[in-house]
Image: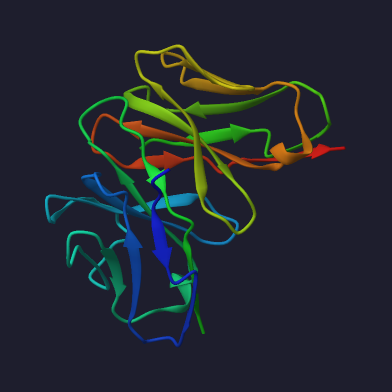
Length: 116
Length: 112
C-alpha cells in the first residue's frame, strides 16, 4: 500500500542552524501539507501546498520557514535559523485532491527535530 | 476560530469492553472529520473519514458517527484488545481552506 515517507526520522541541530526535512508524498497525490506536534501538545497545521505554490499557511509559518517541491517526488520543509521552540515532531501529509468532502489526508511517520 | 475537544483525555479499560471516545467541535461548517490513531513516538494512521453529509462510517470493529449540527462525533470501538492501546485523535477539515484542526486526543489503554 502506498505511504508517505519522511527522512530523517530524527534530526538534532544547534540553535541558529538551518535544517531541511524531507518527505516523499504518495505518488498520485496533488496536495501536500506540513504539520507539527510539540511534545505533549496538539498537532498543529503549518502549511499546505498545491500546484507549486503555498495554498494556505498558519501564523506559525513565518519567514523562517519555507517549502519546496524540488522535483516530481520530494517535498521539503526548510527552517532557516532554528530556535529552541522549533523542537517538535514534524509530519508531512498528502491528499489526492482538495475540493471534495471525502478528501483524506495521509500522514508520514514524522521527523523528530531536536534543537539544542 | 475552530476548537476541537476530546473527552476523556485518558481511558483505561479491561480487554473485551466496548468503548466510546468523544470529539466535539465549535464550528459546524466542516467538510469532513477524520479519526486517527497515534502510537507513542510514531506517525498518524487514518482510521476513518466521515464526510459532512454522512452520519456514520464503519471499519471492522470501529464505528464513527457524526452529528454536524451539534458539533459532535463519537468513535466506538467494539470488543477492545490490548493492541488497541494508543492515542486516538479527532480532526476536522473546515470549508474554508484545507487544513485539519486537531483535538488533543484520548489516550487509551486496554488491559489484558
